[in-house]
Image (tube, rainbow, N blue to C red):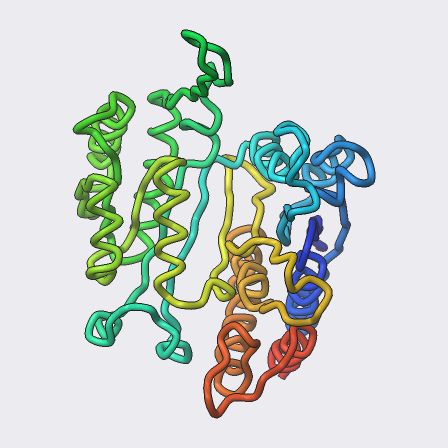
Length: 358
């Protein structure tokens, strides 16, 4: 029985990296005798250029009809002057909302092959880095109402509303604890409950949900301390559970300290399929079209897609093993080390696909 994947290449290097991710998916399916069907739709700046809308209705329909969605990246200076509602980023926010993707899972893993790229002190890096940020994705200050810019006392004033309901907190907390049950059974919930009412409710609800997971150790940490602890000793963390704003910042920090932003995947999931899978990096317009992009985060996102989106763990493992094999000898420019062979985006995709096929 075939599975359908909707490709959203997007902007900048998005088209290049999604092409390599597709190679890996096709190779894994071929190796295991499974059938994958691919559709493609526009999002972001490319969609705006073609339709005047960063998220056309046709794209939403194509995503809903698929079993999983595979995204590249959106945005670039070309569209910076557009009004907020037309900017490429609205395409990403919109598709998350349309598909009900309330949980973002971002693993931060320091691969042994890339230990030399880690930005941490060697003695800290030796302790290891293997954590996952579970971030609420459709609430918080990014979506809260009211919001806007208006004149107050003769001055332009901008305002946003940080907002969370009990149900929004409860459902993301369950994702965090379920994720921990498959890992080291530790959850650190991140908030700012000494200042924010939303965080006080967050802490109360997370603590209540924890009662249903007695095997999981729960701790709480203020977001400013968490930002410091991630740099001081990330080995203390397993699952970081947090809201949209704090999670946006902390997940990028966790990724950056590995020294290899081009290596980290992510998944955005809801209560029902399809889920959306994408690399954490941006569209990198400065290197777009030059065959310089690192496709490995996208390829690893393809592995997450197979494991979490299509329940194909054996095929996911084929991709992950192939990436590890490729890194023993080959590197793109962003992770280049002495003694390795420099390759471009397309060549790296070919190498990984070749290893998958055996």
